[in-house]
Length: 397
Image (cartoon, rainbow, N blue to C red; front, side, top):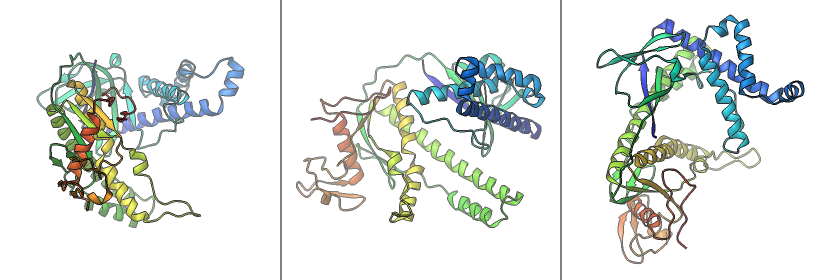
């Protein structure tokens, strides 16, 4: 049963926005105190109670705290209980080796309230543009209804972003996966050309006209007095501009991945180690790195291209349409001729031009790499990775 999240902008008045922020602070405090308890006092708790700290034990303590502290009781208990559940799941993931040790939540980074669907009222559509929903201890919340909601609503989350408050509905619905007989495609991800397809098509993420404005407000914030209201105002301007640029990039990725998923049945990608590729080159004091500024610019370009998010979006969209995503070893795909198989670094003259020294095949370097990726992912002996996600693709012997 597929799950989808529908996110909408809340146009809250000042009083409601302040209440949201106050509740997020309480939820964040509950999470951090519970984390400190599990990290520093689990031995004393086990010695006194004879069992380890768990969600039920911390939920009982939360009930006692709410009876004694009025400003904690003013905020919805559902969001506070959800924070304790998040912490419990974070520790489960840590002990299972799926994630690192839980970290404290921070202001302006982890500002969210989550409610179960049983505690949320029905969505009331007011007109073609607006709708509202009733939340516990908050009341009716009006939001911009930009698209209809499909399926049964699960959790409802109110989250703060740089451009204001948003509400997200997690929905599950029935879906019968169709048979997909569309042809496969190889996709090479890059910087100059964000995507190159084995069909010869190339897609570049449109350049944002907001980068200069973002840098200007960052410089303005740096010139103003530290920790002043004017500096905070400049930082808010810079954050809003950066968030708008991020939304533009996400929109482009959604449009592009939807078009690819509708045209092709299998997408073959390189199994890139993006975390390693975007690591800092600063080095240490004893062994400082080289070309640090140049590497920092390359890292920003890689992160702006959002290669991993593109993979996630394409994976779930292809799975929804009955397709699959395959990942192959990226080695030598950019220097191997897709016609004769000759492997030579001299084949690639520059970033854009590929000319095979053996057979004379000429093509755009990124398109040639995409064809090699497609060939590697469609070999008969290759084990494909579906949208469910195994770690990789076994290369042909």
